[in-house]
Image (cartoon, rainbow, N blue to C red; front, side, top):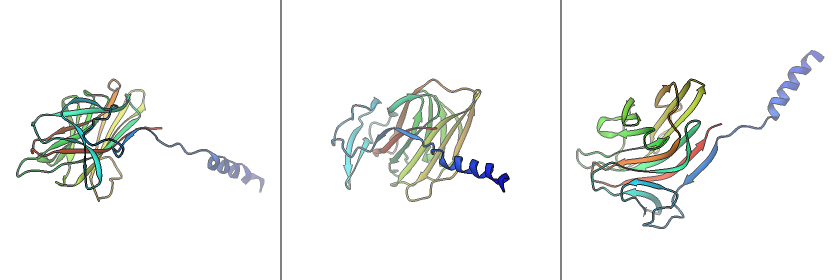
Length: 212
């Protein structure tokens, strides 16, 4: 009977170990932000972003004009083992579609972009599309985006992104994946909008998480 004691002890020790959780290092849902304001911790690169409210919900809104590319940065600077997420809302107008996304590692780092006109999501490294995947965007509904960079080993980094429409189940696996031999320089998370449809783009529930 004693021969079972080591196994039992090992199980007991494992059960006693604390669980390792991801640490949220930045979060902003705009509920406490004044309408018309630009929260101080957001670094606006370009665009007339401002807090707005509709149906009791506050969010950070990019106007539908002019038709250019705009963005802002948020959270602490990081190069890897980090995740960013946000909810983004916009609408099409006729055959015109918006484009929007979230990023990591600064303005020239990685960007997970929803491109409704192409019915796809695209992963950018800097200004270059490095991979893409099909995605059926729904106009007038919130889209959830999540992007992370993980160090797998000394010469391997994984960039993984997910996108799903509000009210649908979150994908269990990444929607899009890229393997890199080295990480890009550290930088803040970001959010991007291109109101090519001439309609506003709304951003909400910004979050940056440090991965264990």
